[in-house]
Length: 110
Image 1 (tube, one colour):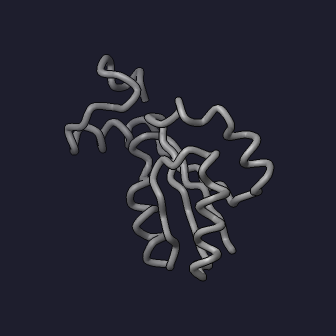
Image 2 (image 1 turned 45 degrees about the horizontal axis):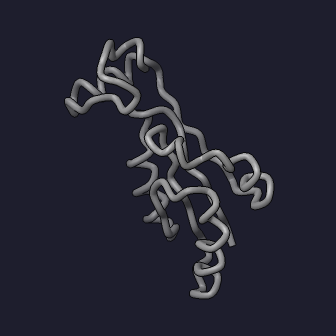
Image 3 (image 1 turned 180 degrees about the vertical axis):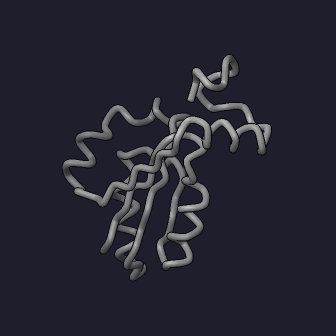
């Protein structure tokens, strides 16, 4: 089974990448705590799923104390997305969404 962890900067394209991965046949889950990844993979294997991915973003960090231990045990492919600050700023201005790490100076938060 292929197991992928998709993460990166807020606004860097995780949602778009998630859709692309789903189109490639990945079963994708958002912000599932790492301690639940092994049971997810067991269930996926029992159902014959060949590709599973988890999207991780900054809003869920409180649940990720055991991330390093689980990554070491499962050895997933990790995809980290980033973009230039001006691109992130433009994307947030287009969507008019609040940056998940704060509501102050947007450029500083990026």
